Amino acid sequence: MNFKTAAKVTVVAGASVLFLAACGSSKSSSSSSKQTANWTESAELPTMDISKFTDVVSSNALNNTNEGLYRLGKNGKVTPGIAKSTKVTNGGKTYTFTLRKNAKWSNGDKVTAKDFVYGWQRTVNPKTASQYAYLYSGIKNADAIVNGKKPVSSLGIKADGDYKLTVTLDKPIAYFDKLMGFVNFFPQNEKVVKKYGSKYGTSSKAMVYNGPYKMTGWTGTNLSWTLKKNNDYWDKKNVKMDSIKYQVVKDASTGLNLFNSNKVDFTTLSNEQVKNYKNDKNYLVRKTASTFYVEFNRDDSNATLAKAFKNKKIRQALSLAINRKSYVNNTLGNGSTVSKGYVSEDLAENPKTGKDFTSDAAVPSAVEYNLTKAKKLWKEGMKEIGESKLSIKLLSDDTDGAKKSTEFIQGAWEKLPGLTVSNQNVPFKTRLQRSQSGNFDTVISAWNADFTDPISFLSLFTSDNSYNNGKYDSAAYDSAVKKAEGADSNNKSARWADMVAAEKQLMNDQGVIPIYQQASATLTRSNLKGIIYNTAGSQYNLKYMSVK
Image (cartoon, rainbow, N blue to C red):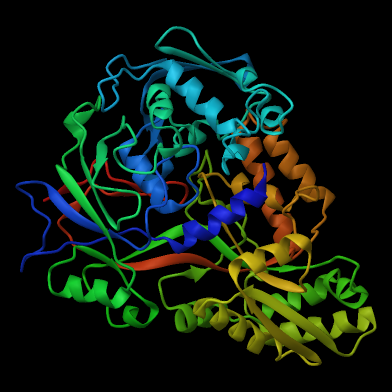
């Protein structure tokens, strides 16, 4: 996978949180008789082009107005979409999908296998420049096509008539079914794409929809739009909402005022607001599958720091010095939680026992706070590298939240004898460039899963991954990840054990320092039912939403 692209997406996804609002009357604007509600987004809607979206606002809009072979339900569970049935053969390398004959686009066209072939080929076509084309890796010839070495027609997808679709993989992909519920793999109507050309997906009119809702009122630049029930949708009987109106509201104070005056049904709270609403009956925390962590630069360009960061005791000491509980409660205060490891909580469950991945793969010492132990290990580590003093630069973004984070960690680390820390807070784009080029000592990074599988996290730190910025190198880790993605792909239990082994190896090595799992604190009215929220990928599935 090309994780350079994924990291860009991660930041957008972490920053754009969907929240529900209403306006107009003295009562809550959601109406059980008309089944309408008013929503607000925290950011503008960039695009409705399935091949070109990169952010969570577009992802949520596309997920509710379109549909792929599968739809992701509660806890990321795969549920039927356009595919009526699926047959897996050839050792997990061939998928044959039988499509519904009653699926239609909002212009009346039938949804056919050719729409999937066209949509997928358009996304992997280098001319499209899709930032999510890397997710097609593993589908036959996808990598070669993306790299311009083979024609798009050679992609491992074939239409056999209108309602049979065959997909061929280079190797089994254990999480392939989850990918089929992700927006990037949705079908596209070739006639509509060609009709609008460069304007396709730039407004609600320059688009066609095959999902629960269709969009109206978005010009491409305005800050409002509406989702209306799509009467051409194959499962329209289970869609209860008549319309959901959106508007962009960026200020948390405005959102809270609207909520308290019964003009808003859902709003996101700022850090300062949380303390006053923790006991409110409407208080709800939405976790995301994202981990914020500190990464070490082991590159030999700085001999002293390379020597220090290659010393396990020094890495452990830097981790043990951070009081994560104090950090998330007092500095963040927005519902974010202390990391239990590198892979986020509530992402995946053991296929046999149902236990969360973070429970099976827990290494408590990698995320605990123990300043006494930290000082002891620091002293021992410094002696081993022959140094009495050390100066470290800590790189992060220049947002208010990032500055608070670096200040907190700086204060924690400087309790270690002989350590001086200087913070470097720069624009996100600059931070990303410095991270990728290795121009940092330590850096606060973040990762958000695109699908509900631990491998979305774990692949990042293999020694040959281009986004392993700190050059973490472990043969045992590489082997475990390789087995999970290869030899054990078709063995759920063995694959799970591989991923647990990889996480434990990374944490026992203190390869990175996990800090916290991001969340947003919200107020949500109790009469809003059926909202499906997933921590990874497209977060909100509003197909079954209703007002009681």
